[in-house]
Image 1 (cartoon, rainbow, N blue to C red):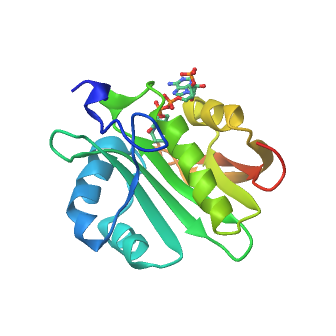
Image 2 (cartoon, rainbow, N blue to C red):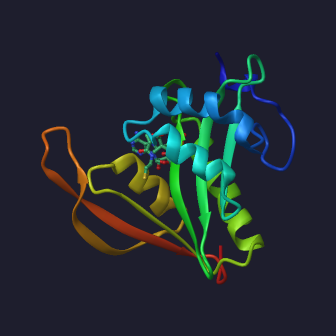
Image 3 (cartoon, rainbow, N blue to C red):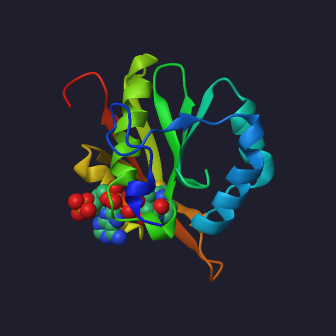
Length: 167
Ligand SMILES: CC(C)(COP(=O)(O)OP(=O)(O)OC[C@H]1O[C@@H](n2cnc3c(N)ncnc32)[C@H](O)[C@@H]1OP(=O)(O)O)[C@@H](O)C(=O)NCCC(=O)NCCS
């Protein structure tokens, strides 16, 4: 399906993230299994959809309402944390994640967050470039934080973006 099948409305241009609710759980579970190598469990997704300190944003296809991209944001007392951002493999490299990230930053700022935090696998070069180009900086590293397929640990990079000063 071509990317221009998205609703061409609102401030984001081609895509309009909508806040997902409990009724979206089955679609969200299907999306995670299809798109995310580090898929969240159904129980975690359900908890995020119900928790007022979380916001789960989705971009849907205009044709069949299937989810094409999802971002999960947790609101903390002074900061916000991007816990997941994922795009369907067929829809990658078309600017969707960049647009979702901009949207999430605006939501976090509007809620009073001073910084947006996140962590990623050290080997995830696509995500690292996405974040660096959006102004995120590396704050530190967590040794062996992620599990690899071969059972060994992989380091996490901790990154953050100031939401108060500058764009
Ligand atoms: C990482 C991910 C979200 C990027 O989504 P996307 O919609 O393809 O990204 P965009 O098209 O918005 O790309 C924005 C920028 O990110 C970088 N980028 C994205 N994919 C890249 C890749 N495969 N290789 C190198 N850089 C990449 C580029 O700088 C790109 O800008 P450019 O196209 O102008 O060069 C997507 O690959 C994905 O869902 N991966 C699996 C889940 C995941 O790893 N999430 C991050 C966990 S921390």
